[in-house]
Amino acid sequence: MAKESENRLKHFAALKSRYQATQYQDSSPASLLYLILRKLDLGIELLDLESNWLGESKLEETLEVIKQEQQYRVQEFGNLEFELSKLKSKYKATKHNVSWQSSHLYFILLKLESGNFLSDSEVKWLRANGLYETNKIAQEVKRFIQLKSKYKATQYQDSYPDSLLYQILNKLEITERLSNSEYHWLINNELFETAEIFQQQESVKETHFAHLRDKYQANLHPDLSLSSPLYPILQNIDIKNNLSESEINWLEQQGLSETIVIAQDFKEIREFAALRTKYKVTHYEDLSPKSHLYKVLKKLDFSNHLGEQDINFLRKRKLTKTIEIANEKYANIIKFNIESGETLNESEIEWLKNNGREDIIILAQQKQFAALKRKYGLIDPSLPLEPLYTIMVKLEKKERLDPKLLVQLMEEELLSPGGKIALAYYRLEAEFYEQEFHRTGHKWHIPTASSYWRKADEPEQALKLTNLDLSQIRESNLKSAISVTRGAAFRDMDNLADAESCAKKAMEYQPESYQPYTLMAAIAHDRGDYPKRDYWHEQAIKRGAKTEDIDDEIKRLVRSTKDDNKRHEAAEYLLKKDLQRYSWAKSYLKKS
Image (tube, one colour):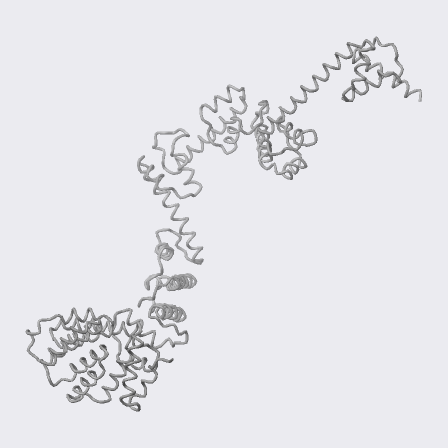
């Protein structure tokens, strides 16, 4: 207890001395003054009662010291906050808004500012608080300090990464040349040892440059300075980098042709080695880029496939692996083209057959068959590949089809008479007979071509073809045939007046032909004059038309009638006329 009492007395005496209260006589630890001074020492604000007591006790000097100390604390508190704000801005930590009094940030930033490494726990703290930019700067600071140590620049105080010294030291680290201004900056800042290291690097480079000029036959170049464009070019050659076009152009301008030859030789040697590895050439003795194998491998690398001559070259040298790679590469290219929508040409088909890749041919056929089915409107997925595939391929090539096969497919209901394949077939036939007419001058091709144009649903072409001066034609039957097909084209376009005119002219040209009368019957049907239609059909029968053919023609007329009401009327008329003969017409009656 005595010891504690003694310590309290000493403490009280020290506080009285600090706060200018030594004239106060009472030195007992139980004194009010001791309490007040202890509170001040702990930074606790005095109460008004306590301040008044000091005044009453005539301790004005103590009050003045307290006032000054409080002012100092306020000012110092502001200084600390201001300094932290500057550090937060400098080290990209402005987003951290935690009070500096309870955060590690102030200490960490001040540590960086004084040029010290951060500990692992401090780095983790920065990351945990999302201060990634601050951490990045910290790592740069660490590198800067390490470089200053390595390049004898530790006397330079600033360690912030935006320093010019940091840029200079980074250049020295990769042995990059300093500019004159950077070198003089080192001298002006008395970093003589750092400048000396740079000079040593330059000396090594000069020796290296001289060696490269001699090695790559560029000694005649007058510029021997390290700033010459020749130095990085020779370095590229030496580390086996391919030269750019601009570098080769520069060497040409300097007349350094031997250097270019050496560089090109190196390039070809490297390329040849890479190609041998890529294409499994393991036992070829001639490794010179001038060998024919180099040319063959380059061709393989840049083109779709090798010709037979090149394949034989490889086969004679037993480079079977290379041949396999070449074949697989070409097969993959063909497959890719097929997937992209291309079709096989004859040479590709022949190559695939010769190399046992019928699977790719089948793939191409399936892909093309699917595409052609879409083009020609064949939506049934169960349709067989043949003969439809062959037919559509011929149509694509503008090759004529076997009409018997086409009729058979229509009868088997695999093709629609008015479908796209049938229309394409009729168009090809029309074009063929029209071309034959122009080639041979044989006018009987005109009605044939016109008939096909009509079947191809292009009556305009039929009218264009039959727009002739018939007075120049001698044969009456030919003039009649042309008039009939022209009239039928007019009828296809619902021009019944011109159609009738053509039919009557055809009757005049060849009165005993039944075809103008069947045309007149069709015109009467279109007009809804069914008795008149029957009359013209009777006239056609008198002139050789078969009754069963006329019945088929009537059935076709009813089927092709577009208007439902007119079709119903036509069916009713036939059923009233002969219920048994025209029983098929029941299906065309409108259901109530």
